[in-house]
Image 1 (cartoon, rainbow, N blue to C red):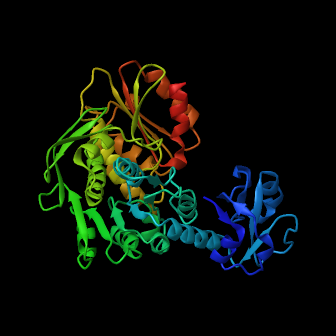
Image 2: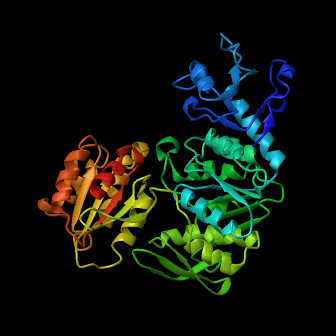
Image 3: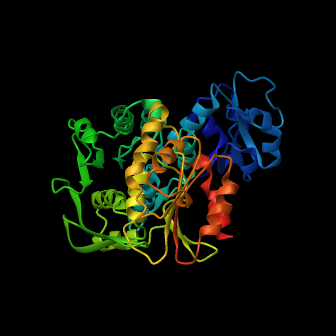
Length: 456
């Protein structure tokens, strides 16, 4: 990006006169003073750490200008300053201005599970015929979305933006910020049920993604989910995906191996699709990409190639070889009951000569339903399919109590959240070449540290 400081000042309705800054250009924006590049605009956000306290660091790292919140004193005099009422709102205003200036088509994606994988798939499909920018990693909140926008190149034709939420109103803000041409919901699960109470309320919050949808915008959703069907009845333009014949894009002939899943789409003849990951649950994510690709008239052969070669964000469901030549199915970024049950189904689908070992950690933000939802995983664990089970965390202890009557003591282990090293020592002593190990937990359990030990 490149904007003059006076243009930035107008875009955010600055409270001070910036005419003296004529001739100063910015080429990037950052809110972390350590990550600034030359000619950057610094945005001091106010949170647990007040960014205003790091203005000197920002100057030393190359900032040529800074926002400054009006309620803060000691306005710096050694760097151009744009005074605003609220620095976060100013960041959002600037991103909205820049988005309108570049004017790409916008595809917005949310869901209780699979939104990052879906974002990657959609971007891969659309990139075969358009210049596409997508959300980096999971920059999907009220800070990350504006930063994603401000990172787009002037030649961007389509922006694929992931949107997360953990409270009512958050997606409403983000949807109005980007005004999507296409909005998609992958699924309604139990993620963040601690804050919402029921899946119905989660669905209500997810549906906020259509609040900023352009007048002729299209809503893409899972037609097999009654909560979404009910809430989309009055929307004029919709496309559905799923496994039922009534859906606009229907998958069938699904076959899965540990490395890939193949399927066909009822509405697309003579094309077999393959994604480089296991699990029929990932087929729905691919169907979102196919549905959106069709809206943008992507050729079928291009969609098939893009899905096969999709570049997935790290720490999603992926097979990794361990130090003992065991196979590790790593899914350590987030977790909820629906996701755990689906990945266990995929993990146990293929028989192997070695043993299957599941390492499951707490599923966070389940609130009052935590015990019930953790206990519900009992039905997905069978000693004939998963020979050993390792559980870690405070919330998942209830599942251990359920499984003590199902698993022999030598094949069932429980560790507290701070006993990751102990878990590794026990697990590592049990692993042999040819075994398969599943790692699945919310990110707060930090199973990525266990993965690093197992692969070192």
